[in-house]
Image 1 (tube, one colour):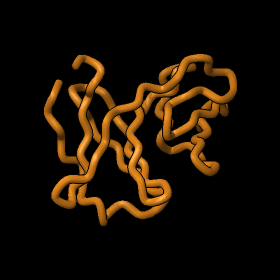
Image 2 (cartoon, helix red, strand yellow):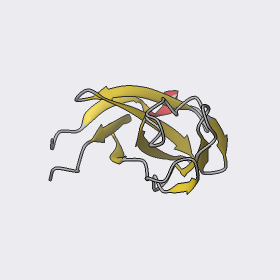
Image 3 (tube, rainbow, N blue to C red):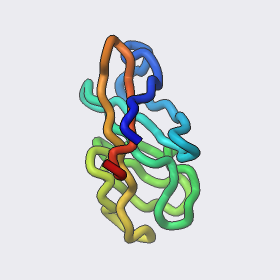
Image 4 (cartoon, one colour):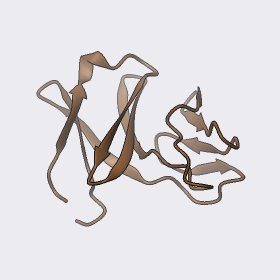
Length: 106
């Protein structure tokens, strides 16, 4: 998939906020941290539960179900019970819109 998908106006997402959208059937959570945007698959790699509603701790997200921790910037798993990284997606702001794309198949 090479197309950028509009998600939301960049100025509508507050610092520390997030929005969840769908990208070709994949739930994607977009977060705003330090004025930058980061996009991850909204599914914990431990058991597939949504993760976007988890607690933020700096640039980490804590899974609300079992407490696994991930870096929002890289998707890297930081603590069990998860052992696999989250999938990250390309994200940019163009024309005032936050956009995402799935670059895994380029």
